[in-house]
Length: 567
Image (cartoon, rainbow, N blue to C red; front, side, top):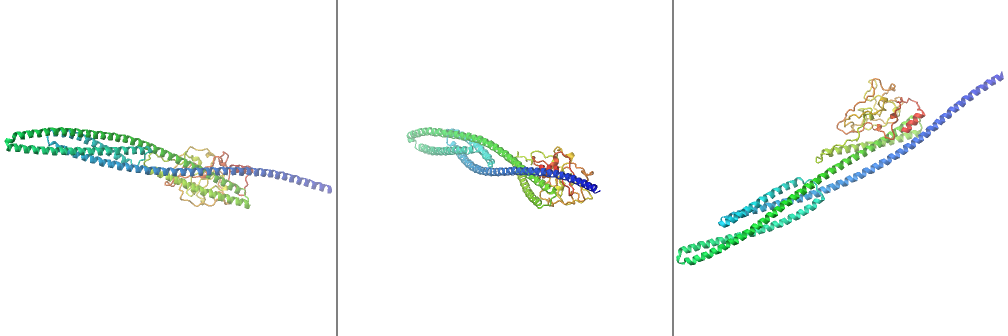
């Protein structure tokens, strides 16, 4: 009996030993799995560090590019303002010179009118002088017509210069203006010389007229004396013949003087013709300079459009980098919270990650504000510069945004800058916020980006969006993230998790975007869904959607490894 009892005990002990050996094997397997998981986590952390380093380098490069572009813009603006001021001064000087030339032309016209009157007075002196003065009058009238033509041309030119006071000219125009100034001074000298010559001729005509009057008086006196004293008729006749000879010599002198005056008038006509040709050449030069100015204006507008496009691309890349960094922080926080460990180290890490995420969110907010300011500046430039009608408003994004990137519309309670998703609903498709259940109260939680349902993972064709989707100045109450309540794993359903899959009464259709604030510019509605191209979200890889994690649920090593890699 004792032997049987001992054998039974031995068998029992052998069974216990076998059970313990099986337990040891299980523990060894668990240790191996844990070691593999630790290795994968180490590789994930190294990958995240390298990604963060590359993102920081890219951000620093973009900031340097932005600073350089700002400096270049300021320098170009200063140069442009200096050129505009110099061109305005030059236009004012030219306008003053044209006015002075107009005054001189009016003086010349008045002098020509005086000459005409004087010629008409001389026409009454005699038949010979009348014919000569008529020829001079015809020449003066021709000159007057030419002067009136020149005056009209100068008035047109002055009007064109007044219209072009706001336009800018090229540096070659300064040299041309200097040459024209020299030519104008030369023609002024010629005009003064011609005026002195005309005055000299007028003095000669006055002297001739006085001499003629004196001769006429002498003839009258001699005739009276001849009538009184007939005895002295012969010497009086001789004296009259001598006087007539003198008078015959005087018309020869007058004809020579009139011929010289006619030559001077022809010279004046030639000078006026040359001035008219010079004015035509200056008109052609001004037209060429205007064309060059228009070409420069078009070039400047093209450069401004290119610079705006570059700034928008830089801002978009910076925003994508910030969104990628925020999504990585959220994924790390979710992994640490899913580990279900209450260690102080993990809590400190979670708090540090949350602080970093808040900093990134603040940077994203500032970035979006600067982007809004840039859009407003572009709008003002396009609507308050009528001299550049070819400026078209540039779209905010070069490529159309697909509606599939934003599967859930924005709720009215959503903050303009949505935060990271909670750890409890990273991988669970929820009912959209726009279709709440009447029996389920809606808590004050921010709307988080939802994963795509299996029938929505393929991108749909782009749909038209309203240009104003978000109102950045109406922030709603957003609770601090990273502290999920275990009794409510789904913020939209405080009475427990919903049924598996989407609600049967409310599937996930693609709802159109509701224009909430049409007076404000566009902002990205779901920044966390705009993943970095190197780090796509795990729920976009074509796999089936997983259910929500339950309280006390620990994910499998493969699931955690996959989430860590895609973080």
